[in-house]
Image 1 (cartoon, rainbow, N blue to C red):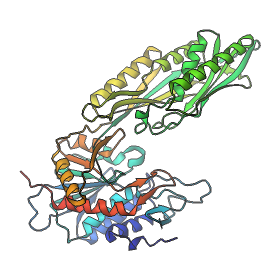
Image 2 (cartoon, one colour; image 1 turned 90 degrees about the horizontal axis):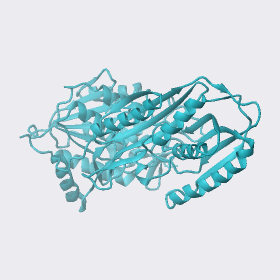
Image 3 (cartoon, one colour; image 1 turned 60 degrees about the horizontal axis):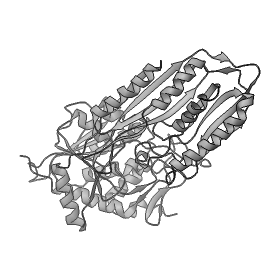
Image 4 (cartoon, rainbow, N blue to C red; image 1 turned 120 degrees about the vertical axis):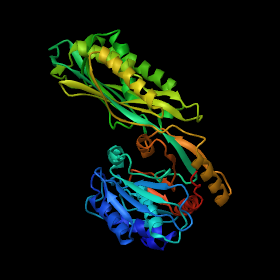
Length: 488
């Protein structure tokens, strides 16, 4: 394997990226990468500091004759997602990433590469190091623990940043300029109950399962209108309960809060003489759902299997209210953007429904680029579950970034890209979280753009970054710095 990353171009970017690969930096373990940046900045005589949220801030004065240009803030996050193949022995808190050149890409041996957002960090360090570049006043903001909670962006103090323009270097498709993203909100619902004993005789226990769905990222793939396993499961439970006495014993649906649920299952008990009818109804229901999602979901499987009878069940009244609340809970795309056709503006994802013998806990992740709309959706979901007797908490709210198609930096960078490469960049937004939304809430007058090189399969051991795209991205970055508008 060719591991000579330093031989790649642009040399300064790859030099710093190669150094970053040797520094363990999974989320919440960023001490050494912070120290690396502080040591580097001090060695170059640059003003630098670490704030209370463990963000690193570096300032570089304007090059001669560029003092009156608008100040630009270069921003990237310090942490990486630690994922590895099952057969890979690796400790992300101790071991360096084993990166190598694979044709036109750089990837890692069995682990995430950390190009998200290590290439952004390396590019900023390259700009700070290169005194031949022409630029106005520069600030570098390296944020902490983005991947697991955007902690650094949330903790960013007001008044620290002085610039007029923020360039977020955390996008993953070269040639695209991102001008908006969704904010988020967690809706956490809890039904408490005293478990009841199941009937001693006359009933049969079965497991109803929904499997084979595509799932996906609850922001990026929500526009695909994929099925939600929790919603499909409870829809059947509701329909079956209208015809049969059905005792809900347990439920376990979904997984990660930001993933569309692929699987869900419930253990129920029905009268033994009604099992045949229930089985026929489930078969018919499966055909109905397959038809509804034709062309979207290819492998829907809804099954009913015998299982041992549990000793306890969810209290009947609670189970009834739970089923009704899940049926009524808003899920999926709620509104499309008028400012940017094809972009989801607001959505919700009923990500998790799980019982533990004392409670049933549910979680929905709400997203919107319009903060008031996100809050209103949260209140609507809260109202549904409060009416059903659940306790509801709305937590973890962060702001979205609404597209501004009249952004001055957008027009300037569009012109720069066309001048450099002969084509216009694609201007778009993402229905997922970027730090721009949070930073913009603290600094509402910032003009912001997010862009980056092409990174494939981030957050997985297949992650790789396209070498040629890094060169184009960096050329575009330094051209943008050189052509920053003058202060008014």
